[in-house]
Figure (cartoon, protein in one colour):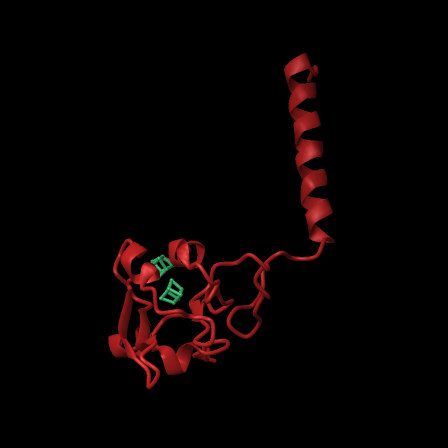
Length: 143
Ligand code: SF4
Ligand code: SF4
């Protein structure tokens, strides 16, 4: 059998393909065994919204600008007559982690946490009221 140019080209491609296979055979896998293993998100990862009650000035801009109305705020007055937040909550089912509220907040009271495991069995568990939003929200781990 005589080898033509086409056969030589095919053989070259075959060797090149095998080379790629061999290279990956000895390289570290990029996959991880979730949920037993978890990868730390990048610093700019947009996880569930975190609210800082100390900083919040009750301007309600975040609620107003949220495109899906996931934020619910009840405001009132404290003993000194100053406007304050009586209740603050985020509905994680509707929140699409767009970050509009974080950007619009004039006092940087909102930020993204690294919390991404938002699956719940009951929809009411997806309501993150102020008690659950202080600091890093508690993570529901299923394993
Ligand atoms: S991240 Fe977007 S969708 Fe979620 S609460 Fe903020 S503005 Fe609304
Ligand atoms: S925009 Fe910021 S300061 Fe205004 S209500 Fe929302 S969290 Fe509070």
